[in-house]
Image 1 (cartoon, protein in one colour):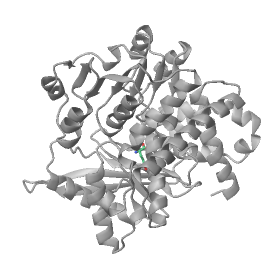
Image 2 (cartoon, helix red, strand yellow):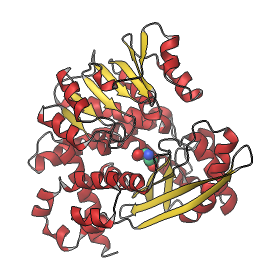
Image 3 (spheres, helix red, strand yellow):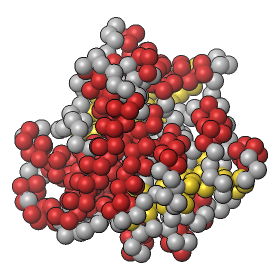
Image 4 (cartoon, helix red, strand yellow):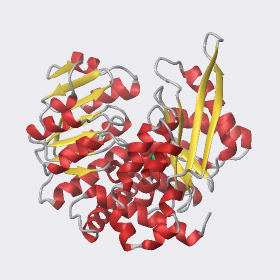
Length: 438
Ligand code: GLU
């Protein structure tokens, strides 16, 4: 099956990696349930239901025509409308969108909520672009994509390079073209126009909730732990916030220019001001904080820690980094980002007895809270922060439970990778069987 996926999707290495990781877990399921093989569920899962690739022309501030490519891969809708974020980053090509969309199927399934899997984005680079340029790009992107969306069809949200600002411009254009105030077509909206409390914080908070459960399962807690969080965007920021609330100390974080070490613990207000509010560089954090230093060469994973949370991007933690983490005494690695750990690094960590939480379980809180946003939109209601956070916390606890229970059932106790892949797979596979050959 894997050879077939490679042959049908040449050059899409990240997609191959994501598929391989899931297929490697499914042996025991297929052995136990021949009906999945009989109806070619796995083969069908590996083929997106629909892939949309389109031209995105726009004019920059100097009136020059710019051109980008837009993508939406609607991977699977057996469990609900297509659901998943949009990524704006120069590295985006079909292979990245397909890896993310494929992972999203299992993540969304594992969340237990009624959402299918999709992902989209563009190779547009928002870095250095003015507000007006970002708006024109978003409007052009939506002028094509709107026809494929809808609250019962496909519901995008944010990812790298897409936050509340971009969702606003896209929702505005969608509303204008369709002449419908259809809140449920997007999630990650602003609080005054249909957004949900806690959605901004959800991926990071959810990561911390999940790791809290991982620690609890081995009779430990966050109290007094040293934590390293890579990244300094939306996921990293709110993971740091919650981990601090749980009594641990985050001593390092990063961006694409390097990382900062702050033995006094990351000052979150300062980090937010520099990275989120002003979209600045992380070296400024070290300039403004006496206890911090900035390192532009080497790796953030050289910093000794008990818990490592890769919250930046795919394949940011390789085998060499894993070996260093183990040597420095790290006991838990959990993925706030999508597929940040390379397959070899995962292997090395698990062999050394490090507890490893895969992204499709650990970072499911973001999309789960998107589903809560859809629920609020459908009932024209809005919930309080505390109530929404409580719901998120319960969802993360149940995702954790589902992983361990499934891992046990299939003879791989404490293996979160096996647990997440099998639990995610069986729910969507059963729905596909029930819906027939479609
Ligand atoms: N991009 C996020 C993820 O990787 C969130 C998607 C959503 O909320 O739809 O899960």
